[in-house]
Amino acid sequence: GIDKDTYIRTDEDKGKGGGYAWKYDVPEVGYKCHMNDITAAIGIEQLKLVEEQNAYRRELAEIYTHGLHHSDIICLPYVSPEVITSQHLYVIQVKRRDDLITKLKANDIAPGVHYTPNNTYPMYQNCRADVKTAMDVSENLLSLPMHTLLTSEDIHRVIEVINDGW
Image (cartoon, rainbow, N blue to C red; front, side, top):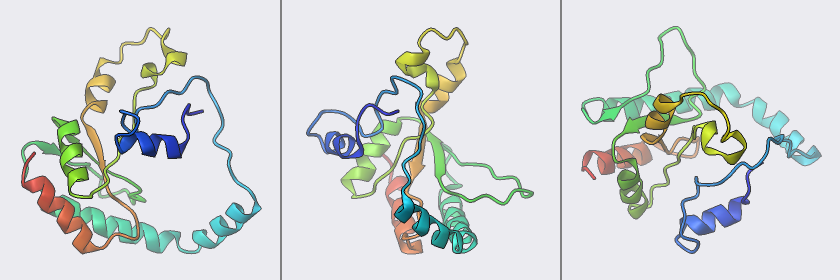
């Protein structure tokens, strides 16, 4: 599992530890099993809302796509018309990602970084696969805010900050 708990990673992200929240190590393979009865009960109730929440996130994604599609420096996610996505993330590909992260955070917008290549973790350091493309792409991926508490106004604000340049 991850070598730092969420609180420590968040604290580091605020500058107290000198790192970014998404920079952590995975020293060994683990299992993501943190559910108790209360969490399970909440999950069961949330399943009743899953279709509605997925539809809402798809609406928010359409706003992002419409507001950012004209940019020649941002690669937007492609979703095939035959696919119905949960849109749990809205991941763009952009050069100078860390500069954009800094700008978004300066505007109280919390982006994320996902899909770090496995070979960057020590437990996989002896793997011999050539993952140059994965490394190159991962350095440019940025997850924009995407959750059901966001409003269309929130998304338009993110778009405005991004379109202002970085």
